[in-house]
Amino acid sequence: MSRYQITDDDLKHAAQFRADPLGIPGPGLQRVLNLLRGGPKSGKYVLIVKEPFRRWVLGRLPAERGQPVEVMEHIEFTDLADAEWTVFKLRWKAHTGQDLEEEFDK
View 1 (cartoon, rainbow, N blue to C red):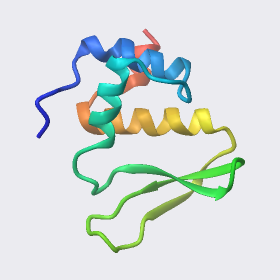
View 2: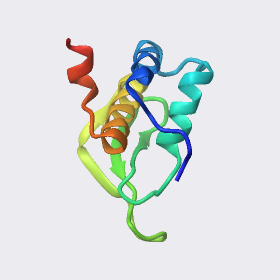
View 3: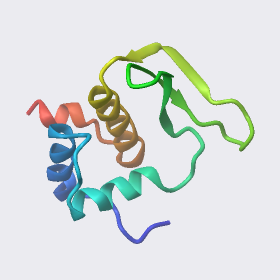
View 4: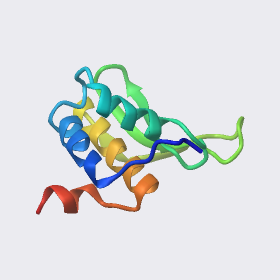
């Protein structure tokens, strides 16, 4: 378990990611990304390239290494920024229990 935790103060970093999901993250956002990208792999959301630079689908990593990735063909993206934001929101919710859309719609 990491000694760093995501707090309400980190919402500003989520806003930074939403504004530019493909940009270079600052130190605070990088810490949040490290938390969301690290830890247990089981059930973690990922992007699967269907057509390079054009089309991606959502996937989930399996519980055991070597097992197939769950491919969610019905959740497809043609914009990488939208795809990255979706994965960020899903991982944030899995990590914190907090729905970012509710936070940004206030």
